Image (cartoon, rainbow, N blue to C red; front, side, top):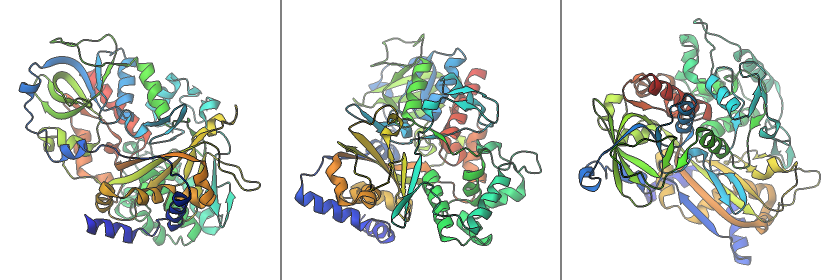
Length: 547
């Protein structure tokens, strides 16, 4: 453990010494604000990993198996998208087991009357290929017209308010995140404009979302055999500012840098949506807003406990606070052992059909005979993240002529910047208090070594990572505005699209599997964005309805 920690710290040149020193100095002179560090998924996730429930005596602890119709495992984007589609098609006899964290990576952070993202904070405007997602947004009233057009109209209050973004570069703030235009950047974005329209020899778009709709033209898919950094070098891109920007974009969307992700993934980031709009959909609590709207639209009702009945039937979908610890498929049903997240009590359900909307790394530990489905424990590389919320009793002072933006990024930082949750409220009235959400993809070393360090990393070190961009922006005075800090550690936050991810045999096998047990998660695409999760959730729901 100590070796892993030392190795990570040695590799991490991006730890902000200034942040740590600023915090320590402030702490000596002032009462420190409360700090909460949440290691999301622990210790339960490690109990699953270690097989703690493999031989659980369900018959002794849950003496009677209960029969149900459709069971959804998880409550992230894929799970709620599946629920929305089932409900929309009239299938409402559904039980949703929330899993370890309500709404998964779309969780919210709440402090009194303040709301902020606890995970993902925006949704890019979906492409025409994201048909179900556009229909979902229309059903929620977010997409107002033009569902199948090249220029759909979205509700103004759901689009990010100006100013959208700014970059601190060479000691001052500027509007665009690309530090400067030069010959390399103009050449790169001219290429991207062509790639947005490019089609392979099979007639399909080269880059599409969902990624499974992308062209299978071998010439283009060869991009997946090298890293984005290697491709950029091969193509003669040398501009330091462009290379920094492209690396930042990869870290922001994939949790790993240009040297770590596939060249196909790197270009896909810019070209797949097919439009030029830089606007995004966002809300003070991030994508937790979408999750809540999907719950409401589906009629999902929380249930403290399952009724004492042999056969469970509900007039509307219900949610229970439980996680799956074992899944066994039988000829006529799928047997799922659930564990109450609060009490630890076990219950046994026999469902006609099950949608597993858990990360594949979790499903591989829970599903019996997992290899039958293509699930292999230990496969897939997941990026560790910190999502840190700073509760502020006032806005930090900006410099003369400077204006806080929704997304605020520091050039050259190891962090990904910070988001002002109150940005969507300022048109009405600037609140007295706010929350700044800082994002940090910990891609400075081997993910396994980083996770080992995260298990017992001192609070001061975690805070240095979390606060580095805020201290770079405001200096030591930033701490005077801080009431409390909440650091959420997401050790397996998102799957990294390493070179070769398009032809990953595990993902192909899971996608091809057909039975009463359906899989739905962005992992099936090899990377983690809401659009992919929604696609697989709806696809799983279609198979449930067809069965």
